[in-house]
Image (cartoon, rainbow, N blue to C red):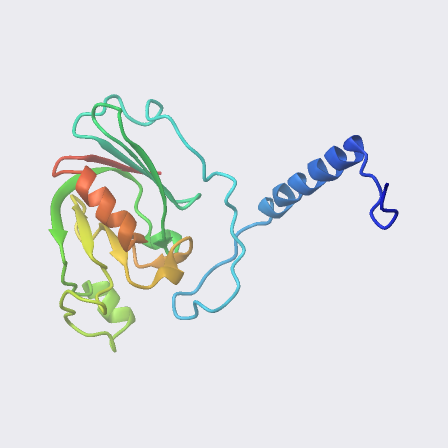
Length: 198
């Protein structure tokens, strides 16, 4: 006996409705980014995540000696490939607040610190004189649990205790990851790992 309260669903109608529903996020993805402000993380943010996808290393690196890290500032994603190509990781990141704070190009990991301390750069201190001169390792440290120091002075790939920053323009130049992601990346990289920011 058929229950008349629930009409029979036509397979074609179901598939057409599903296809329309699946297409909806693509419309949302075409919305342009908004400018985000570090001091107000409670504001709603519109992001374009269409570029957050797996990538092949070969268009960006000539080899994988010491492993490779690619940071795509536009899609706010960090890609990692191991030297033997057995490991590929893709992590969401925070990126610099403004274009003038963003540095692009080739660099490498020159130091790795588990439990980093933090000192604001001279330009940070000038913009934010109320900031402390030094923050020891711990839950209040802006560098999170781990930091990869790059060959560029003051630039790091590091964790953050403030998870609201990931996926946003929220840094003064560094690339931020969730603490669990930077811990994993820290275990995969080494001094000498090549890094490219695009």
